[in-house]
Image (cartoon, rainbow, N blue to C red; front, side, top):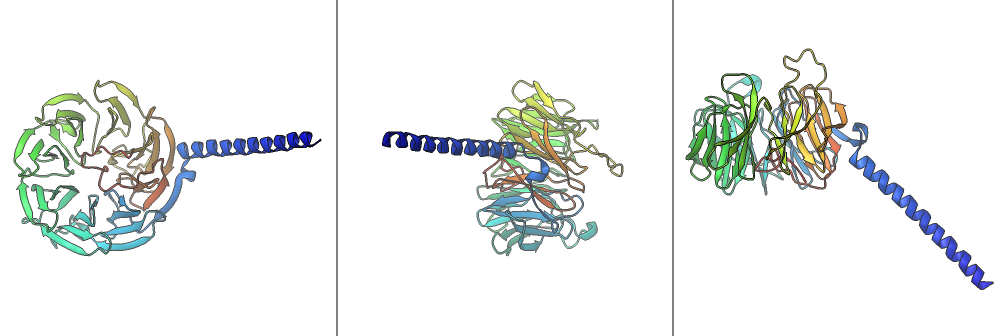
Length: 406
């Protein structure tokens, strides 16, 4: 009798455990499915309309749960709570075109022209206290050139590019100039690696490797003119997108990092955007608003997306791309100029989901704390992302401009 009761009790316990395991497994599968393959409604988290403005190009950067976002609409830099988008502080930073660079307790930014393009007062490179927004130092270029691109910190240097007088290396502690290399009009950011600073000029056109400590030109090649596309460094190679000499066609050039010699070329692939590289695969946003994936070592095409744009007849060039994509756990995040935000499968190029943001999409995404952030001219948005990484301190994440968050 007691034996039969024990057996029944054990049977009920086992059945209960099995039910719990089945439910837990189902919940786990559900969690994986909706976190790996959410749609835009499931992924959307919040929207902050204080960050806005036409050609709001600068990427929001994040560290320690705080997001720093430039806003061209009101000429301010905002510190926001990354979890909900609430404003922590804001500081006047006029027409900031580049992404802020976060380095320990400081944020480095550069101003562009004044309101409505006015040249005065003179634009400043500056360092702000992360917590209080206090201005720690400022530096004005002697000829009042505007600061473009995103600052890059390397050791005691912070590198800035200018729309007219090339590259400056400033002391990151006090803003004093250490060296200046006048290579003309530069629109992109620099990249740093192995004691060199890499940059591509717009006019006169040219690609450069500079000594990071002295600014001396180590090599100079002329593959074409670059606009917003910044150099990318990967395993001894420099990747640079430029307009092919004498044409309006952009191509992506793979150069030897130490000499600038051409290794290979992706002809007709590229534009204003900075390519993304991950595990020997290069993802190139192109002028026809497609992303092309190639094996970087062999040059083999792996896939390309369908055209990533929607109809906006008021756009002069609706197929242009200014967004530099970001990657986390197999998903590429990208925004078309016409204002559609995409989540794209890294392996196949298939679109996992997309969302119309209702404005023009000049901004590039950043990733942090399980979220992806994207600006357009209407607002700053946050979506759920497949990443636990919490740091994105600069444009394209790191000094090598690899633009991934794994």
